[in-house]
Image (cartoon, rainbow, N blue to C red):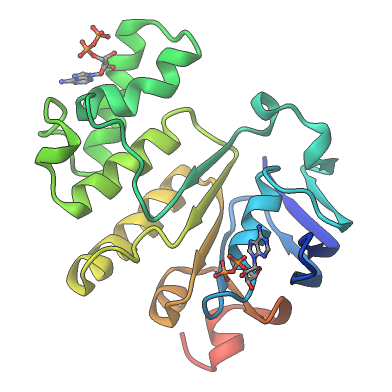
Length: 226
Ligand code: ADP
Ligand code: ADP
């Protein structure tokens, strides 16, 4: 189970920038929440605070009713994916995906099986032996997702994961990502400035402008169409 609750969360950076201005938001267990808004409106700052990478200036963030900052990174069981894939270039695809399991001491046979399962689900089962440099952009993003979900996180945080890809690939991966995430049933917060992504992927959309949450609802509720 993973629920996320932000209560009256504000983030003011040391230079005085109010990046997030008194936001409250509940994300339900298994929900795919899209945080939508233009560049600079504070989306990444929200995500980084949920991940425990940044402290709110005021307000609280709860993960399963516990303060995120009270949980050790291990207990948070949060996976993050960014737009720059940040793969290990010297490792193969299989090694990249297996890396978090190797760090947590999962034995080889189980690693291999889990990597194969995840890679097949992502459609990259046939490129496990390649290096990231030998992959397309879409394949690299799939590897990054595979590496993020291999440890079966409770919460999946994605920050503009498709924004470096061309439009055809973005459309394809939108469907894949939302399908995969729903199959896993993992609670997800997905940050984007792309309204089409929000409309096609979200259970609910949270619309941000200049640090403020403007609206939260299903795509139909906020846009009047599915
Ligand atoms: P988004 O993800 O929507 O593009 P961000 O959360 O990255 O927005 O940034 C929100 C605002 O906070 C922007 O005005 C940005 O310039 C500012 N900001 C982000 N990080 C810092 C920082 N470390 N110091 C000062 N201002 C920052
Ligand atoms: P090492 O022997 O140093 O662990 P390998 O290249 O044999 O390095 O594999 C690293 C990890 O990558 C393995 O533990 C396995 O989980 C994964 N892996 C590599 N190739 C495959 C593959 N063809 N099918 C499934 N998993 C693979």
